[in-house]
Image (tube, rainbow, N blue to C red; front, side):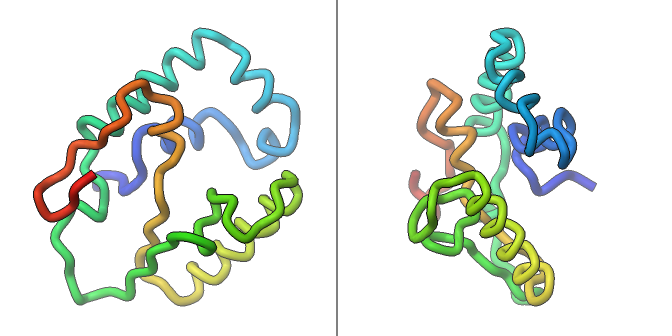
Length: 128
C-alpha cells in the first residue's frame, strides 16, 4: 500500500526516533549540508510528483478530519511557539484525531519551506 505521507515526512520519520525529536540530534542533523540537500530534494519531489490526499477524489466511506488553521499541529496559529507547547499541542491533536477520524489531513509546510520549487502541481479542482 502506498503511504499517504509526503516523501519529506516519510524521510523525517525514518531518520529520527521519538527521542531524537527531544534532543540535539534534530538540530545537529539540519546543520549537515548533505542531509539538508537530500531533504530539499525530497521536498521538491513531494511538491512536484506526490499526489496529496486533497488532490484525490472525495469518498463518503470514512470520517475525514482536515486540520487547518488552529487545528494544524504544525502551525503557529493560536499556539505558543515553545517546543514543549508544540509537542503538547501535537500530542493532544493526535489523540483527538486518533479517537474520531478515519483519516486526518494536515497541511505540509515542510516541503514548501525546504524546496525552492514553491508551487505544488495540482489538478483543476484544487488550485495551488
